[in-house]
Structures are given as structure tokens and as C-alpha cells.
Amino acid sequence: MRTTLTVDDDLAAILERERLRKGVSFKEIVNSVIRRGLASEQAIPAAHSVRTRPHHFGFKPGVDLDKLNQLADELESDAFVRAHRTTEHP
Image 1 (cartoon, helix red, strand yellow):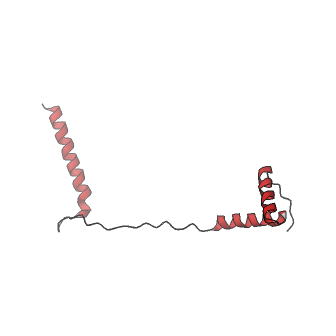
Image 2: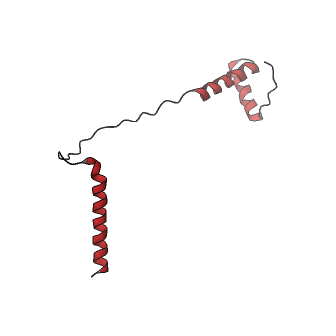
Image 3: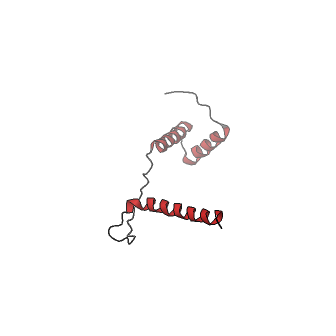
């Protein structure tokens, strides 16, 4: 396919340097650079792997770990009540 391509001056200078370095035609260097650019755009990035490492927290049998947030909320509420009770009633 034949087409007209307008290239910025800085890019034209880089292409010309590469053309001279590799000893190929301008057409070949432009096609090569476009192919590499498109290939890198289409490359699928490596999937980020997440690893979960189990940890034994030493809880005794019968402790419901699903209710720890509820316990933390209750302890926080109790602390809040105690803090305000002592400041309101000396």
C-alpha cells in the first residue's frame, strides 16, 4: 500500500539515524518500527499473581473467627462509653 506519511522532525531524525545504523531503506525502518510498536501494544501483560500465606493465630477451638469484628466493635463501644462517663460525671 502506498500512502503519504507526515512525521514530526524529531521522529524523522531518529528514524534516519536508525536507518543509517542498520543500513536499510527508510521504508523498511518505518515498517519495522510500526510493527514493533503494534506488537508491544497488543502484547498481553503478565498476570499479577497474588499469593496468600496461611498463618496460625493460635486461637483456641470454639472461638468463632467470623465474629471478631463484632467483638472489636463491642470493645470499642464499651471504651467510648467509659471515656465519656468519666468526663461527664466527675
